[in-house]
Image (cartoon, rainbow, N blue to C red; front, side, top):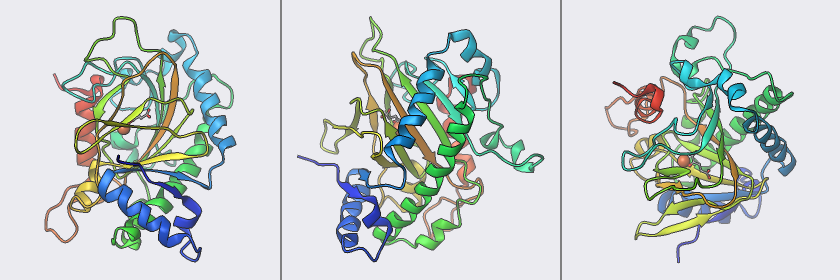
Length: 307
Ligand SMILES: O=C(O)CCC(=O)C(=O)O
Ligand SMILES: [Fe+2]
């Protein structure tokens, strides 16, 4: 049976700890074989995650017309609320029935990067109170942790951590709240909370409310369920890191079918700077991170789809 490795984050991040070698070895298996791992003993507390989950829960519980005030479909970017059906991550499935709320890096006033849609301004609802402050605080904590994790994981798989550390100074990192209502009556074989997909970026730091639902595709066929209580995290890797490491780190397909229980999850998609070259290191190709990300956004967000 394939197991998703569980890693002590303190041991991983601190090379002087006696558990470091064991943590690094578990990371190698998680990154290079399965494409998923879970981490515990992290710098982000269960309480911080519960606070973020409570904020998203209150937002998604607002009446539809209130959420529509920050509907990303009214913009050419992906900041704000995405209604059920606003994203189609697989051409073999219908648009997902989840709702989302997406937040990106907040740039200083007048920053020329704000012209790029990957750095579009965030849209904030008036309610719930503290929603913006809670998400901004979590965004800061999660991006710091994600960078430390990515560098430690790079070192564990034999890459140069210093190289990665310099490619995330203005990251196109996207924080998302996913709200999965109960699986709709009449949902069929092509309907999913989120259909089978790989993530687009480097590393995804995923918190959940503890309700099961996420499934990871096994190489030999079949699915492995993964769960994470608040304070623990699921880590998986995206297409850019797979390209960047010439396939040594794997971007593994995953999905949420959804069931009788509502569910909330909070991924941080840790994407690099817009101008990072994510082509295999040592090759003479250039694949700009922003080009890959904008192409994937244009394929999957229904309001950005061509035609
Ligand atoms: O809800 C989950 O557990 C996973 C969500 C996911 O795969 C995504 O948002 O990319
Ligand atoms: Fe995903």
